[in-house]
Length: 349
Image (cartoon, rainbow, N blue to C red; front, side, top):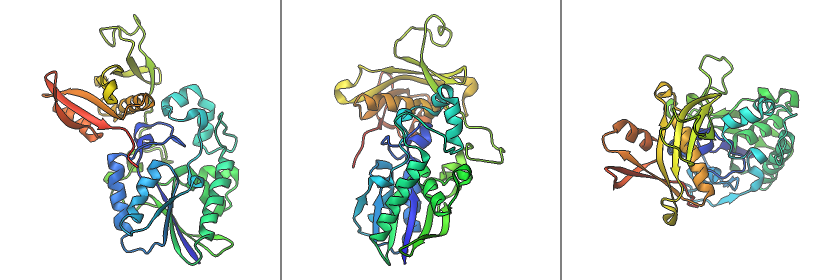
């Protein structure tokens, strides 16, 4: 009898920045690394013979919780990847909802009719992940294996094991980041011992505890997913005093809630992307929206080949400094009368 632990990756940029990440390769957040430490503690006394992950960074980095302390080799398998999201990859969820409302509704319901250009279907994902897990289980008879994959992929796998019909896929529960399921495999079929367990995570580092989209009781307010548009003059003069082609307006539905001003030329030779100005308007502060503006800057500069973000935060603005430090910026010096801060956005494999 083979024992299989299926584990979702730790919190990654898509979870934090509210962007669509399937095959898009994203980094683990600072909170995600705290989740990895909690996962490592949970597996400290559990024997594992082999560790596999998808070949994306967010799963291979999470897998270090098991393979590194146990002295095992990490083997990657693209069959464990997340749903390929095609033309939606790395778009803000707010933009997808605005441009493709019907398809977004189908996606949120895990509806078998969901389809996007250059993407997999839910059915194709289910076949792929089931085949990969079975193939890896067959390689390790009578051993214990840890497999690291992704949220939607694991839902579809568990749905196939439980023979959930397509019209009921929406009922398959969502798992927290680093949530784990345990199954056995007798060479013919899988049996579930438990699924989507996140008991190793304190509430303060649980990703789902901070979000509302997955709740069925509707007790919490809905998450706000932003989209972004270029500023237009003179229509946007009231939002910012000077016309600038690099100014972006953050939108919640039809309402402007903040601004992002970048400087693509500054820092180019050092592979750094510079943020000149980032702000949520006063009436929308305290709602956790500012991090999505950071995510927009990360997306743009990473596409441009930059591996770090820089900004200058006023030395007397302690609130702003705490905000940027919370999301990975570190003080690196002084510039223009303020504190220079930097965040690494490249990959270390």
